[in-house]
Image 1 (cartoon, rainbow, N blue to C red):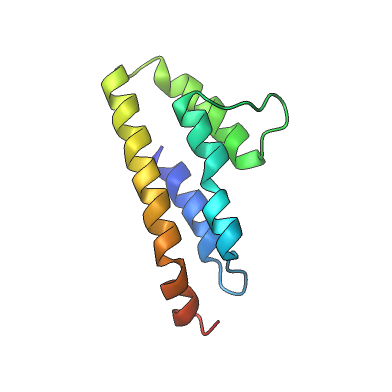
Image 2: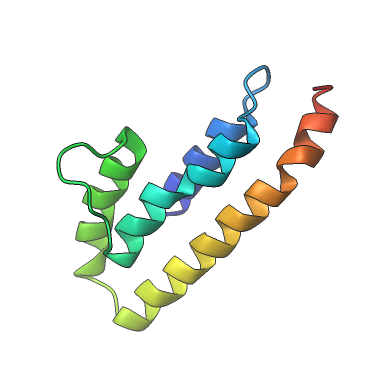
Length: 95
């Protein structure tokens, strides 16, 4: 799961392609919906969310519900911090 989190984070950190504020704010929503089990997507998930859905299904059968709740809350907090750090990262990139 850690590798997945890093992959998503790196998508926003690529030099020359910083996400807009609106894109950064909305990007975690499909991922969080998958983790929370509230995804309304069927076969039309964004690719990262589709990959997470597959990984999450396989992970959930092996871990306690308390760990799933912990990971979901931690990922939501991570997504919020990533969004808040966006303006600082843009400044460091000279944007």
